[in-house]
Length: 314
Ligand code: UDP
Ligand code: MG
Image 1 (cartoon, protein in one colour):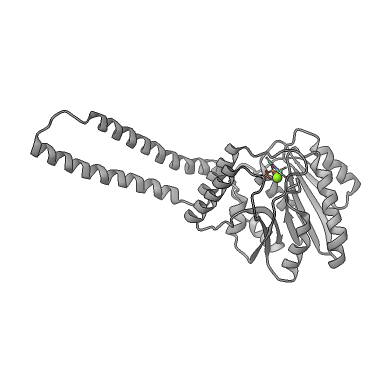
Image 2 (cartoon, rainbow, N blue to C red):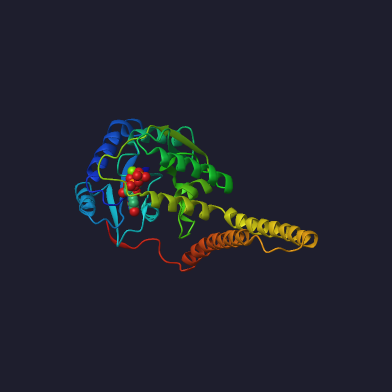
């Protein structure tokens, strides 16, 4: 029998889990089962090292619906990317869906996603938010800037406003699982593997319960990670800045020597020298920082540490 796997990363989501399960079950019974009665549903809840009652909420579901509801519990918080990877590894379905537990990813789209794959023969049906309503203006501004920047510097194009919420065929998931990298930036990986993709748009929803786990600092780090993981342009920019600085200083030297020959050499201009030294020092540190970022990534990659550690699973 064909099966749909739903992968749900959860970090301190004790209130959201039962609401999420009820909402998805409703769509499944009212719509999916009516149109595609042969399709079974399985859930993979991933407890990403939660410190509240998230695990017991999962255990309750695994108890009441033991045939369809499964969970994996991590030994600590490994981050959403690790949780997604664990879910993809465990899922046994023919169609695999990744979605947030806070119902910001509307389950009402599931039937549309299924028909996109089964009837229109797409491999991936992704989703994107049409607006960023309810979000601080400055955050939207930075988010838009991020998409412009990454699409400019990277071969891997990211759809603006795209969410992780998507349905994929078995083939796509197997391809993603073949990428063993430690630094996982899912948005980029989903796009990098290619395949025929369609995006469904939807209006932004607020969380049903709990609060977001992303601070502004986290989002900035996430954006930097995305760029470093999918582009080596920053290295080229560093080299370019270095070369430009060399060129400018050569020109300046010619000018200064020429001026000294013509007008003599009065001791002026120490402040401009200090400014130039500071500027070049800053530039060097900045470029060193860029190079360091890549070395740091490589360092983590070569350790071959596991992406997550399971403490308990059902
Ligand atoms: N999440 C996770 N591990 C983390 C942070 C978040 O598994 O370290 C899960 C979280 O439980 C939720 C999803 O990732 O299901 C999205 O998180 P959140 O709603 O906080 O992000 P936002 O929607 O605000 O971008
Ligand atoms: Mg959310």
